[in-house]
Length: 218
Image 1: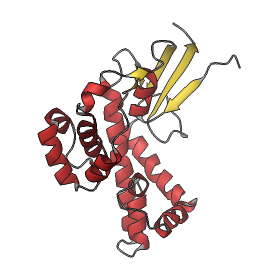
Image 2 (image 1 turned 180 degrees about the vertical axis):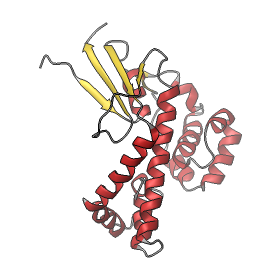
Image 3 (image 1 turned 60 degrees about the horizontal axis):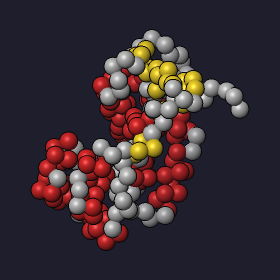
């Protein structure tokens, strides 16, 4: 009690939600959700292009999760997701004082540590975790089954990849994700937020965003 909380994270949309709030989208009609989630990503994107063209223009055609979300929102509520997002509520950004710091380490330095982290994960139970997921016979489209490293390890366990191929693909996927994070943090946060490219040490693994919340009210 009485201390200064420090929030550290690397997922930009979670940070934005914390500060700006979340769109008050009503619960999606279960029948509509099931119908949308049963579509292939190509069909869902084509439908989204017809029903909410601006959303389709903002999204990658291969982004299964976000395409489905935008489509189910417009079908269930009759309003585009962007409309709801303009009505965000619940954020804390206007009631606290922030001292934000974005850590943007050198990309080569970061890539080396990302690769090392995946090897360490393999040695610390990642394979057993994926085996447990496989044993549950889950839908491959579920987020848990598409998490970085899971498809690659599952393919290796099924004999579709060699171990070296599995490691190479999972490490590459992690580096690509970090690159997208870096791009997001470079352009999305306010320009006045401090960007630090030198302040990191050997324990840093991924891009980090830190906030010191100095007070409960402005």
